[in-house]
Image 1 (cartoon, rainbow, N blue to C red):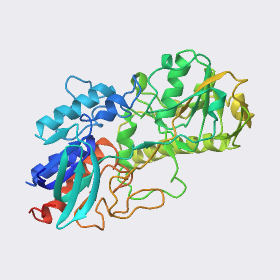
Image 2: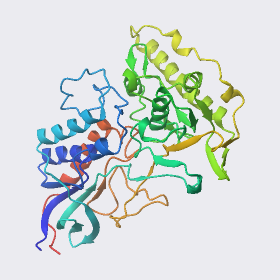
Image 3: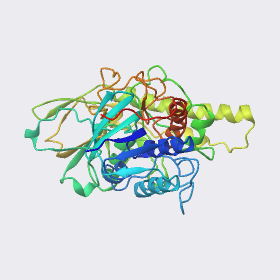
Amino acid sequence: MAVEQIDTLVVGGGQAGIAMSEHLGRCGVAHLVLERHRIAERWRSERWDSLVANGPAWHDRFPNMEFDGLDPFSFAPKERIADYFEAYARQVKAPVRCGVEVRHVERAAGGFRVETSQGVVACRNLVAATGPFQKPLIPEVVPESLGILQVHSTGYRNPDQLPAGAVMVVGSGASGSQIADELLRAGRRVYLAVGPHGRPPIRYRGKDFVWWLGVLGEWDARTVKAGMEHITIAVSGAHGGRTVDFREFAARGMTLLGRAGAVTGSVMAIADDLQRNVAGGDAHYFGVLDGADAYVAAHGLDLPEEPGARAMLPDPECLTDPLRALDLKAAGIGAIVWATGFAMDYGWLPVGRYDPKGRPMHDRGVSEVPGLYFLGLPWLSRRASPFIWGVWHDAEYLAGHIAARGQGFPLAG
C-alpha cells in the first residue's frame, strides 16, 4: 500500500483539531485532520443527555462564528455544540477525515511515520489534538461483589439509566455537581462526596462569571496558584445557569460527604475533610466577589451592587457533623457515579517525553522532538487552554511555529 504524505497531520477532530486546522489553513500549511469517529464525537456520545455548556454562548465559541439562532446569554446544549463544530469545520474548509483511527506513531527520516486503520501516513509535523479527556478514571475501591452499578460520568446518561435506590456521586467539579443535582431533582436519594473545589458565582453584578475571570486576568494566568493544583471547578450552565451551592443541595435533601475512601465489607471510609473542602470553595467564591468589587471601584464601572450574593444558607447537619463512614448496602445505594476525571493515554504516540502521570512534556505545546506538538491540554499556555476559546488562541500560536519550519515532505517509509 502506498504511503500518503502530508506536511502536517492533526490527530483529533474535536475543538482542538478544528481550531488547529483553521490556523494551519490561514498559514498556508498543507495538512490533514484524522478523527476516529465523528467531529466533536465526545460532545455527542460521551456526555449525559441534559448537558449544556458551562459558559454562555457569547463566550464558549470560536471568534469567527456565533451560534446560529441561540441567545448569546444562554447555555448551548451538547448537541448544538457538536453541530457548531461541524459547521465551523465546513466554514474553514477543514480537511477532516472521519472514521480513521491513529494506531501508532514512530519517528522517521524527516518527520513521522503514522500507522492508521486505513494505511500509513508520513508527515513532517504531527499535532496531538486529542485533548485531556482520554481515559476515564474509576478508583478500584468498591468490590463488584456488592452488586452496585458503577459508572463513570462519561457513561452516565440520565437518572432512568440507573437502578432503583440511592445514588452516590463521587466528585464535586462541574460534572459531579451537575449530575448529583439532576439525580436529586429526579427524586433520588443522593450522597455526594465533595473534594477540593472552587465555585465561582455564575453571574455577579450583571456580568457572567466568564467575563469576570477575563477582566480579572484569571483566564490568562500562566501557572497554577499554589494549593490549587488538584482543585476542580464547580460551575453549571443547567437551568439557565446557576451558582453551585452545596448547602442548597443539602437543604433539598442531599447528603454531603468528605472524599470517598476504601471499602471494608460494605462500609466505605469517608475522609474527614468535608468542612475544609466546603470552606475552600467558599473562599474561592468570595475571592471572585472581592476581586470583582475591587475592579468595579478601580475602573469606575456602573454595575449594580449585589449584597445578596454574600448571603449563605445555614450549615446543614451533614456539614456540621459529617459522616466518617457510610454503609453502602444499609444506605440502599444501587449505583455510584464516578465523576473523578481522566488520565491521559498517549500509548499510540511513544515519542517525546512524558511525566510519571503520562502527561507530555512540552513548552507551550511545542515538544522537544522537532515537529511534534500538543494542543488542548490543561495549562498548555494558560488557564484557558483546554476551553473552547482558549484552545483557538493556542492553535494560532502553534500554527505560526509550524509555518516557520517551512514545508516539505519526509521520505516515504
